[in-house]
Length: 438
Image 1 (cartoon, rainbow, N blue to C red):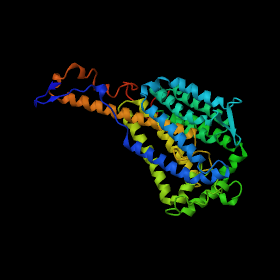
Image 2 (cartoon, rainbow, N blue to C red; image 1 turned 90 degrees about the horizontal axis):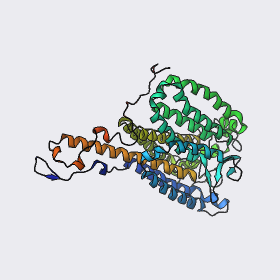
Image 3 (cartoon, helix red, strand yellow; image 1 turned 90 degrees about the vertical axis):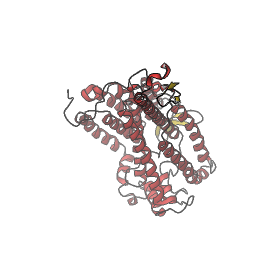
């Protein structure tokens, strides 16, 4: 303890003993989405369970089990230092390709509705791409930290992550999983832009990839029907427009405040995938326009807060944490945007679920892991901010010299912000000019 001029004895606090806290807005949005998901899965899956002779509460119990497992995985992610996660970035990239290849191995890969996207784990099937999303974001965040100056200045550093993404897209095209393919590409582009890529240089590969995506989209007749039927689903309401027509009828029936929880008619074997891909239509029917606005507001809060935390991390030169937050924010916002757009007839039908709300196994697990990682980012950011505030407060105290050596700062003020995963060089900001061309 040291004696300050006011004569008060104050207990010294070590910098590494200063704790952080998890962002309350993130915690609140996550809990609200998860709770809403449990209620809506219970409401939307009763008729489906009875039709399949597995019991009315089969999908609810299954959802609760996976949600409990996901909470356990999220708790593990929340307790793991980001510098420890960053250390295994290359192994995580190898695991991404291993999982995407395993689905093609006989006896390991499992086919559902003609798509070979799942791994047979015995007690359940696991969709490999859900784990790939989390691991790929971690690898790309680490890559942008290690090569952020080169990404802005050279072709090679910029094209490497794009090449990795294209390789994954090829594997996803063979499964096929066009929704996840497009999502990974969008996450890559967004993270590169936020990581400081030279925008005019990035335009060239993007323009080359767009025709390739168009070819993939029209290569299969069923994809072409999806692209055309969403513009007028009632032109063929019993074939290509069946899903969207029933979804729009459900939403229209809900009007402003819905017909009441549990009173949906479309979920009674009329609306396909009412508990997964089209659960928002059930929300619209039972909770109305107000319920849909609530869902959109919760995702906007989650994504907006994640982007804000990422920006704060980057400003404190904690770039790996910031890029992880950006990647998870892009994932949650884009996937929820596509799912909502599909249910409202604004986008062609794609097999993407609403994160934390739709019934699912691997999707729920990996979404929980991603949000646990995001909460860890918020924890370390808050801890760093408290450390900086402590250092500045100690520096402003005239009696700092009386503090014992164990409480004295052992590094400059940047100790709290340069911990673990940050770099000492200035961040390269995104540019629209010709700077850094080679």
